[in-house]
Amino acid sequence: MVDRFFRTGSPDEPQSAGGPKQAGFRNRIGSWLYRPAPIIERRGADEFVPCHPEPLKQDPNILQIVLGARHNLIGGWTSKYYRAGIDSFRIARRQIVFVNTPEHVKYVLVTRHANFERKSPQMRRALEALLGDGLFISDGETWKRRRPLVADIVHKRRLPEFGQTMEDAAGALAEEWERLPGGAEVELTEEMGRLTAAIISRAVFGKSIAREAAQQVIDGFSSFQRHADSFNLGYFLGADEGWRAFGGKGRRRAIAMVHEVVENVINAHLAGEGDAGSMVDLLIRRNQRSGGAPLDVTALRNEAATIFMAGHETTATTLSWVWYLLANAPWVQRKVHDELAEVCGGRAPTLADLPRLRWCRAVIQETLRLYPPVPLLPRQALEADMIGSVRVEKAALVMIAPWLLHRASDLWDRPNHFLPERFLDGSRIDPFAFIPFTVGPRICPGMNFGLDEATLCLAILAQRFDVVPRAGYRVEPVCRLTLRPGGGLPARVLRRSSGRQS
Image (tube, rainbow, N blue to C red; front, side, top):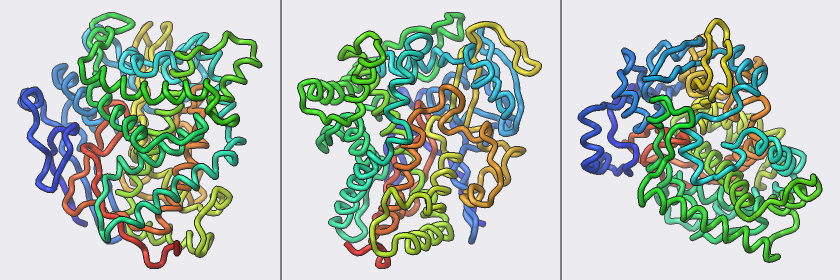
């Protein structure tokens, strides 16, 4: 087996063939005080261990925790956290309760949901300027009032209504790729971002947004992640609500970029230019029938932005990771191609084919296990509680980490290997050990939409193309808000001679 073991530079800087660009002065200062964990990657003739940070040898000190959180939220864990367990420790004046067993995950997210429904102050403060009181970070009465509205419009029974949108958008990207010069290189996170932005904009707003507008949202959210502060110092110093995140000019500009696109489409919809079956239209009509207070433009923007960002960002990053994994596991890629040939022959895959595309679905599920889009699920205790034998203080930070749970060595066979067949062999997957969409009352309402979207897009594109990451390019998983390939993922797009004929 070929091992790759390397240190990387700043994840916020785009990489080139010669390595990461020179970091700015602030990053150089940080690098003197904090060294990122090495990245491990191993390949063999019939096995692949994809990139992941090497577990730390010893617990980090407070300075390393702060700097590490601002660099990469998944890079600061020691080996003991890659096993099922529960732990309690303190950072300054705040209790941290780490929960990493299925039974205790169930207790927090289902049994005692009412006490642990609130997202952490770090997450709420980091996202409130972008999403306002949107469903992802709201709680209490706002969440109770809006959750049924949003859940209804993205329910799995409505998937057939959006299937054609998914097929059309993926087909349009395939046609773009067909027109590229042979072996042309693309940046996969941007390509997948444009694809999922086209799908979700059509589903949410009832109209496709222009390529420039989609790119503006992608660039805006990418910039927002770079400027987001993942460590709210005020919360750990005793402020139960944390400190407000002010940011700077770059952060304000990133928020404005996203809001401009979303507000323009909402205003167009309110002016009668949207489609009657769009999610925004359904949201308005469901709210009217429920007898609730009318949703003003700001509330509509917040919910539409939440649905848009959840539906666009998470699926785009999942698909980006899929191409990296398949390119390094040709035996899995052959299974996917054989399945597509058997199920679809020479025609393009459709939503109706998904029940038979078992390998395609398993590849998506295994990608979500290895690279959950939201790898940390922090909650804040509303009141004191007991989780197992651990006494939880009021306002404590309760941390559930899919990144660690999905890689727990005592819950999964060969947890760091890429093994889609684990979702095919008939073995039961514990629903509280595999939680890429979380679980319980706050499970992602768009879970089925996202799963079908990712599977269908993979099938349509994989049928016609092989995607090969740039030779020698060092891939690093980086999380500030969502889990992305740090610096992007450049790759060549190669037409498959045995793929569907256009």
